[in-house]
Amino acid sequence: MEKYDLIVVGSGPGGQRAAIQAAKFGKRAALVEKLEVIGGTAINTGTIPSKTIREAVLHLSGYQYQSIYGVNYRVKEPITMADLSFRALNVIKTEIDVIRAQLSRNGIDVLTGTASFLDPQHMQITSSRGQTELEAGYVVIATGTKPAVSPLVPFNDKTIINSDQILRMPEIPKSMIVVGGGVIGVEYVCMFATLGVRVTLIEKRPRLLEFADAEMVEALCYHLRDRRVTLRLNEEVESVEETPDRLVVANLKSKKKVSGEALLYAVGRQGNVDELNLAAGGLEADARGRIMVDENYRTKQPHIFAVGDVIGFPSLGSVSMEQGRIAAARAFGMPTNSNRANYPYGIYTIPEISFIGKTEEQLTDEGVPYEVGMAYFREIAIPRPKNCWESTSSEKGPLSCCILGRRFSLSTARSNISWIPSSTIRRLRSATRRRHSMASTSW
Image (cartoon, rainbow, N blue to C red; front, top):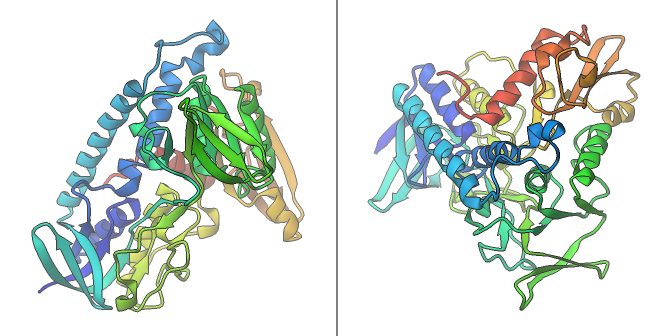
């Protein structure tokens, strides 16, 4: 039986960084991935594909130059799914090669198979080659999530899909329904609307992106409507059906009917814990497959940690990386500093949203007095998009910073609001780079 100081289950951003950090401490680490390709959802179906598709959309649609050449300007016409998937698949292959090189360089054993607990200290790895038992000093669970399913939605991998199936669409539809106003749903709404697709966004809550600053979300909604997106807020889907003329119809609880050529269901995600046999490890997950952890990402078993999307919000690649490093450091008693309250957030809508710190609503609820400062990119001498930078501060210093803008320059914006500390600028820049490329951290 092989014995490891640390066994990491899942090869996404959190799992990669946990394993590499343990190796940096001189520990023997193993990384278990059930798929033949490593990288997890972030590399193969989530972060990297979606951000690459977004870049392809921005380029091929001529979006960045339409203010100069007119709204009908296109780099390529027509734009096809083959154009988008070609770029995405190339970037995915490159990222997988980079991650494999990082893991190999740090002496980490990569094991292919499905991991499950035999007891809190032992795991079984099942693959096409048989079964292997491993003993672990510590375990980090970084299995990520999968799209939530609904019995009301008959997925067919073509016209009724989830976010992991975007690249399987045979063609770009002329009209589309997106169910779910979270990060994933809104990002894809922006992409398809930029391609000229008539998009209807259905969200059962009264506003989009409820965790983000309300004023920034309001500005984003203006841009969505400007791209002919129909927002149906406070509406909930009761059922979905296909019609004989190959349309998809979403029946709402309000008795309205919304039709389109395709439907993307992006309502939540479910933790990948079904095959872990958590009960044998002395653990349990909630109804959405999330594992509860403390401030050190430790579960109720002191030697088992969980990081990344499987523990819930915020489910961002850059945050998962930090969680993985912290978990490995805490496991082996190594000092590490991290401020969870100041993790930066990047949302790749069009235009992008980035923020750090608390929103005005949170400060108001907490009874914290604050002042708001706002700067516009159009007031900067260097040509910039006509969006804005907003910040809040109190007598004790800066409280938060929000940016809405296309390809914003943090260093330039900083000159307009002199009190923003350089550490904040570095965090925001880091969030943008990490989410845009999982290989941004040099190892």
